[in-house]
Amino acid sequence: DKYQTVFGIRSIAMVPNKGFYLNGKLTVFKGVCLHHDLGPLGAAVNDAAIRRQLRIMKDMGVNAIRTSHNMPAPELVQACDEMGIMLMAESFDEWKIPKMKNGYNQYFNDWAEKDLVNLIRHYRNNPSVVMWCIGNEVPEQGSPDGSKVARYLQDICHREDPSRPVTQGMDNPDAVINSSFASTMDVAGFNYRPFKYPQAYKKLQQQLILGTETASTLSSRGVYKFPVERKSMAKYDDHQASSYDVEHCSWSDLPEDNFIQHDDLPYAIGEFVWTGFDYLGEPTPYYTDWPSHSSLFGIVDLAGIPKDRYYLYRSHWNQELHTLHILPHWNWKGREGQKTPIFVYTDYPAAEIFINGKSQGVKKKDFDVTLVNSNDKKAQNDFMRQKRYRLMWMDNKYEPGTVTVVAYDSLGNIAARDSVKTAGKLYTVRLDVDRKQLKANGKDIAFITATLVDKQGNIVTGEDRELKLKVKGQGAFKAVANGDPTSLESFQKPFMKCFNGQLVFLVESRDSVGEIIAEVEGKGLKKASVKLTVK
Image (cartoon, rainbow, N blue to C red; front, side, top):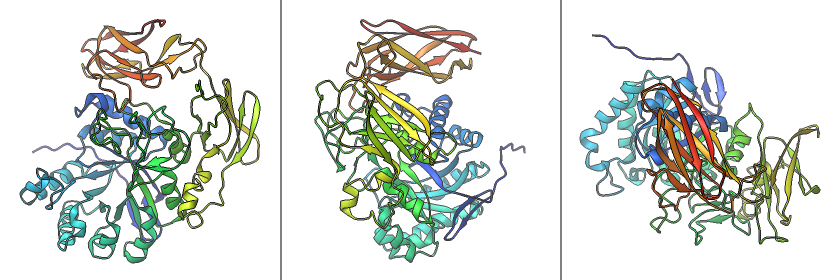
């Protein structure tokens, strides 16, 4: 017999009260949960699409992925091996007790061990896999036999792979810490309710807490709601959520509610945010309200375009590159003279905002804000924790023109500048492609982001013009998406309306080498094109 496998050499260790060590270095999980779908491609696996997602996440500072709530595709695991991203490989969303009638509960007794063994044996040589996850929010958390089932599954993991710790996503903290359910696990993983971490720490022998699922902040790219207030389960007539990043679910919270836990508690070893990308289905808080069809949880939208929230995470997680991002856009005809808050997401400690050259004052991150002194409801509604991680000008009024941000370093020196401008008349389409060279394998994909701009290149957000794609040469149209969770337009036709000025076309290579010319046009717009090479 012959067996060939790829493997990597690395060490992992969980040290009580200190954290997770990778190759001897203390490492905090800066993770996201990813569902299996790839936006407009649906559930079909495509290596180029997976790697694009990982590149976007890695630029944000992500170092780990949770494969929620399913066993991962081999293409994802291989890509994580090659790109240096850790994986929490998950197995089940359901055990014996059903979440729904026709779920995995019907197969658990006969198939749970077989399926778990298949997962572990398939991926135990892959160095990116650092942890096994045996369940997500299973009803057994509150049952008398729950701990027994958890031990049964964890024992299988230990038998097949003694080298990796085991966890699961628990969302019933009171039940699991007052029984043996949570203490059974190698790593106590909690979904949401980070304010329960100190209570869990006091009772659990592991002396470590992992946020297996966090945040579930809601936002729609390019959508801003006024007044800017923290809201739970907010619903609007347009079925969107505000990109000021102040809205969440009844069970969840905002990014800073988790940042502050993992920054201030040495036993909190990191988090996996729900979710890295929007996904098909589950349009909370709109649920079955027509025409909502995809989630609003994503840090990146369904088309793969980053929302504002992306830059908040990047400013905190990416320690190699600087971040300076202004929101909202500055196209607010009809809001003249009205309060229009400006937020800046940056890793710099301070910044100054100018509207048409007039200073709106300097804001500094408030590092005196701690987990303890920001723990009450009033502090949270007053954005106390946000003041530690983002810069906010709440009272400035809108006037057309230019908003400029000047960032200052810790010594007070000017470190960076950026600006947003009120757009003029819609003129053309700007095309940006993730890669200009594709493989001649009939399945490589280039992602072309189309942005509506004026003559000066400023994004035009008020006119969501329909764009059409024509492809010539050694390529073909594959799909299109605009990131609108309410759009009923087909992913499979080469035209779509923009959503807040943008959409993404997917172009697939053919089997032959050569060139691809992708042309994008819209009514009244100057045509734009991009040339790709197929090798």
